[in-house]
Image (cartoon, rainbow, N blue to C red; front, side):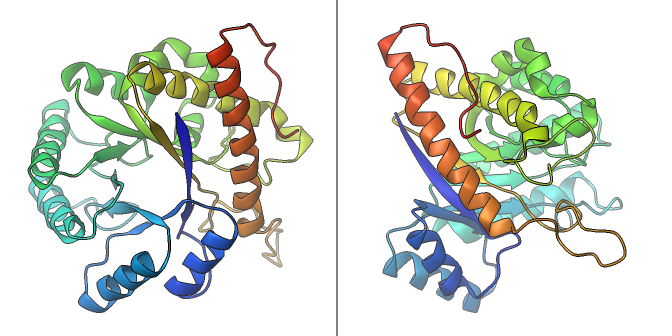
Amino acid sequence: MELLLFRTRWGAEGNLSEFAAEAESAGFDGIECPVPVVSGERHALEKVLQRSKLAWIAEITTGGGYVPRRELGLEDHVADLSAKLDACAALGPVRVNCIGGLDAWSDAEMLRFFEAGMERAEKLGLDLCFETHRSRCLFNPWRCEQVVRALPEIGLTADLSHWCVVAERLMDTEMPTLRAIAGNVRHIHARIGYDQGPQVPHPAAPEYAEALASHQRCWEVFWEAQRAAGAERTTMTPEFGPDGYLHELPFTREPVADLWEINRWIAGVERHHFARWHRASLDESPVPWRLVGA
């Protein structure tokens, strides 16, 4: 099984061409960015993908951006998702990551949203994954497990940093639940959360070594399930970002770290981590777990 790493557009500076060139130069296999909805943006993305060797993961939000508008209902979200799936189908994404739905919905509304999205994606030949994201349907691990039981074919993007905040603990404390959903996880967002926040100030800092190790233990559970299912590749996007996630000094609001440097660091660490895990798992020999990149 092969690990493909994608660079997130979130928080990145420069135009799309510069962003993609930096990603390729840094050794990323692809880019993850929103579905272009106007012709100029779509043409720019087409040119970038044609001129580079980069693959593309499409990102979709429903109901008003990264945080959904409370007044929008189920049909608004379904229409939003359907239109954006249609918009990205011609561009051939590796997969589509959807930050969708609303945490306040009933179970019936939530399942109708997922079913509608899965049906549309299947018709278009798209690999659709729903992200485990705060303010959305899959905002906690136990609700996600219920969804997987109801919809065994649903694809997931695992961003465990959100669940760390909701549950106020690291997610390797919930291994039975993670194993129950592992077969549905197709994509990983590699941001390191901790018990009081969705993003540590810097993942290389020794005071957050256990948070990094916790996420890596969880990611191995997903990789193992993918390999057992015969997957030839797995995808991961280092996704440290701005907008309240990146810590700032009080009064000056000076960022405590550089996002591009952090995401490159995570990419390098996870290439090494995956390679080591893959070798050890193929050997089927017990290898004492140790933190990779510390």
